[in-house]
Length: 155
Image 1 (spheres, rainbow, N blue to C red):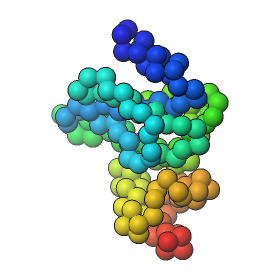
Image 2: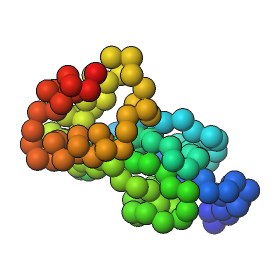
Image 3: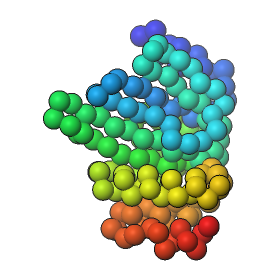
Image 4: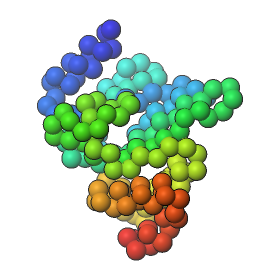
């Protein structure tokens, strides 16, 4: 109850911020920000924190859960924060987000991580890529295509 009150306190003092929950527990859960420029980070203990983003910021968010049998859920979401509390509902993100790329499953997540590594290697900032290109990348990866040729034309 206290944690919820403090999150509301942070969101009440900051206008139009999008909060993204990060948490970690070894071999069980890893929900983390992959990229994006945060305005503020609020720690909620050793394993949890909240990252706050201003409107119209692009960020990457990875959610991984596992148990003694291995990986159970693995997804990557690349989204853009909105100036008003609207948009798509995504787990761990409050109030809402414009989803640009959302992949689930090992193969699609590994392809997306490879794309992110290639873009980082070309000294381009991931935040600066336009939303239309993220949506094209989403369609290509979900459709089972290889994003290498598309990246060659971008970079």
